[in-house]
Image (cartoon, helix red, strand yellow):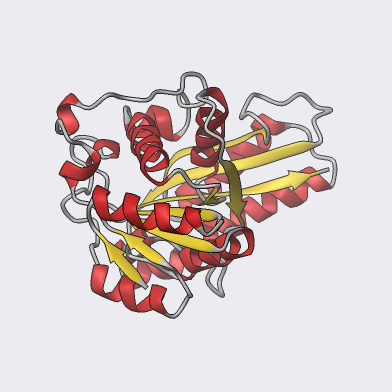
Amino acid sequence: MLVIHTKQELVEQIDEWRQHGDHIALVPTMGSLHAGHLSLVELARESAERVIVSIFVNPTQFGEGEDFDEYPRTLERDKRRLKQSAVDMIFAPDVDTLYPFGPDKATTVSVPGLTENFCGAARPGHFDGVTTVVARLFALVQPDVAVFGQKDYQQQLVIRRMTEDLGFPIGIITGETIRDDDGLALSSRNSYLSDDERATAPLLYETLATVGQELQAGGREFAALEAAAIERLSEAGFEVDYLSIRRALNLEIPDRDCDDLVVLVAAQLGGARLIDNIVVTI
């Protein structure tokens, strides 16, 4: 497994693989890898002869007062995990490699519409940072496919839109959310939870599942379902940012006849901001 830090090394190695006719899959991450990330690597391996995992804690997607400095950086542990997953390359650039003029003077990629609600409203500028860094990774790696997780549902929709709008010849693959045995979606930020908070956290998915069951049973009073779910979480100690039932395709408000729905939630529990979702097909 190669560990590459510079643009020149990256381009030279990719050129060599391309000369042999190899297809390339990219799995962009911020490190602190867990089983969810490794499942994305497995999907990538099914789609290409070569798999690159990027590890970069991107400063432009963190807002003022967010956890950029505290975000876990575990490159040596990540290397050990990826070595066991048949990854061909780790691309671990520094800030200057991805932002040669500095993050504050960087050309920004913005996707209007899809980024204005939910995590986009709660974290102004967050998605501009995500799309900007992903576009830069796409330009450097030029993968055939890129793999993202469903847990960040809004994010993968935004990246799909950006990829189509800018004409990147890259297939976007979405991997299912990987959960702990009690249902909590795996996340690097779960490490922020105390023992008591960790015991409470599975209620987030349990509440989503309850809303999904109501929808499957024919429930169409969306506002009432949302309100009941928010009340349940609030009583358990969550500070709910949003819980919303939307069209799975584009996050628009659904009508009563919509067959493909997604239930999205973000909530603060102690020091961790937890997000999750379930897709419901009627």
